[in-house]
Image (cartoon, rainbow, N blue to C red; front, side):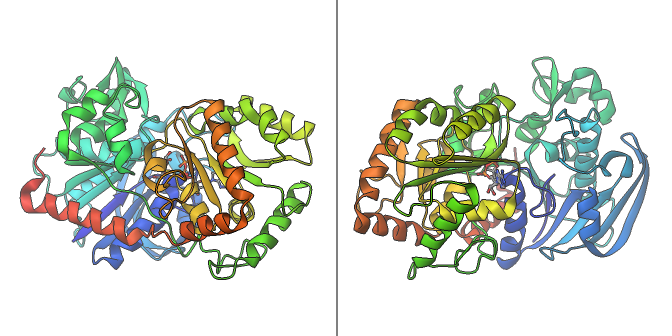
Length: 484
Ligand code: ADP
Ligand code: GLC
């Protein structure tokens, strides 16, 4: 089976969050399960530089505001997966964040940029661009790739079936309705039953409405987005797709996240020999300027600093937590207000609170390895990867019971033989503080803490499980169960 994955991010070349991690691991897992997989990515500088043995598949000329568009095919160095790259310098030859300019504003031509990506995905799907290879399945990720599903639906003959994965419904790719003309789609697509959303053009709807199947990155998130509380106004569209929407849980790439081999941590360790983890903790305290104290419970956050992630809940109860002797280490970047609030408390309590603003992949590993507890108090969380990384590193997750967090962390307080972390319900500081108090009580009992960590490290969040489920879904589509 031939599968084309279309996406805007790929670890380690272009990454703003977990989407990149997924694209860095799922394709190889699918290859391992027997599929023939190729990627389609925008030709950002980092992607073009990493493309090896590349050749031109076709020249598409001027399109979507680009003076020249060339489709290249090669192997992407870090993963070795065969990849098509849309080389359109006027649209993609920009350094930094894939969606934003250096001032943090959306690029004004984002619709053209990601329409081009989707258009190429769809036309690879209808075998018009590469005579030597065409996919059975076009699998588009998030709004940036979603228009591929609409372009496929607009074709008279559409050999490829489409799958759309929602990694985060909150980012929808909304544009001025007048820009619909730029897409070159038939007028009927600008209808409330199609791409129109409250007078705007919604790329997310292109995936939700037109993909033959829609997946989310955890089973709980699939149910949640059918409700007003999590549906971002699209819950009706989600519900209308019925059983065409399903959740498949993300995995962890053991080549990147493995405490026994990780070159980015102070000392490697495994479930059998945890001494290295204590050294990682001391190294982290030193690196952050925290008081070096092996006994002080060290809580960590590695996250985009946005309202999704619930950092304000931590800020709300920080005085209580600090009074209990905990240390807090935060690495992240995002909303200025959150950055400033965290900087203020870090400056006021340098021995107990540390903040590293910015994006640092290697240091994220040091944080995950060195902390005792990983805090993920999200308001919503489609899957969440940091709690999975924490589990693998013997760092106990403390999470809100929502989305993928609910699906991956088993709460202390339930059946003792299954517990892997601490879970709270309400999105309030009080509920978070209660969970931290619960964690501190177990932390004070070394044998219980060890057992909890070990159980976490033994959990299997391998990508092969997810790959088997995606393959089954693709097969289902190809054998005719995929009308819709
Ligand atoms: P999301 O995709 O919503 O941001 P996930 O938990 O799925 O959340 O994935 C976040 C990914 O981004 C993880 O790989 C995490 O380690 C990484 N990450 C987040 N913030 C930073 C940061 N400041 N520096 C390095 N890595 C980060
Ligand atoms: C999104 C979600 C996150 C998920 C990631 C990868 O960014 O916010 O929960 O883990 O995508 O699927």
